[in-house]
Image (cartoon, rainbow, N blue to C red; front, side, top):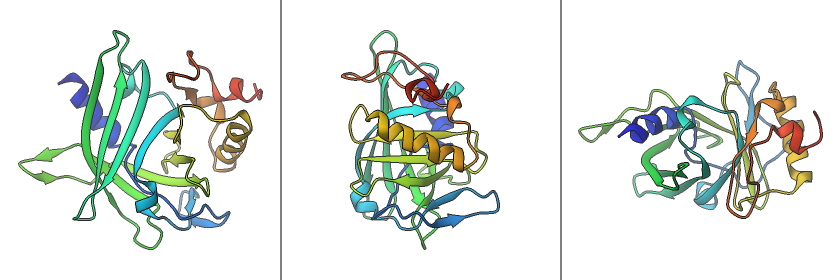
Amino acid sequence: MKFRIQAVLLTLLVIGVGLGIQAPLSGWADKTGLKTVASVDLNRYMGKWYEIAAIPMYFERNCHANTTAEYTLLPDGLVKVVNSCDTASHKLITAEGRARVTDAKTNAKLKVTFLNWFGWRWFAGGDYWITDLAPDYSYTLIGHPSRKYAWILSRTPSLPNETLETLSAKLKSQGYNPCDLVSQKQNGSLQGRFSLCVLTGQH
């Protein structure tokens, strides 16, 4: 139950769905100046993603390692979101929610929720903006217009340093401090938590 409540809060902020055919340099910016990719192909974006790094949040404090998100496109156009992670005692905890596209022109802006009230889902919060995407869908960068939240997700448990350096530069260009992001422990990859600046040698 504790994780379910945390997951509600977490997903109101991120890890939902969406993505693009390619990640063009140009995109769409709102009044906060945060740009998204210009085009999204949801079918290609479905599947499992590993959290490589993120701005630490209170809601994830029980997630010790192997944080992932898995997306499935449903017949009604919503996306099923399943978030998972391991606790320090090696217990797997999961939570299921839904995401929906809020910008049909680009499909790059979504809202995610775990709130379900007698079958009715509330989508008022949880901005999930796709701000960068590899042409082959090997990684993505997720942002929030407040700049308080950001995630680097990958199809594999790790990313090359060169890719992390590129994403760090893109975060900075969007008004983020890359040093705020901290790596996530993943099996077969890093076994510690490090600032993105440390990982990229920019500290």
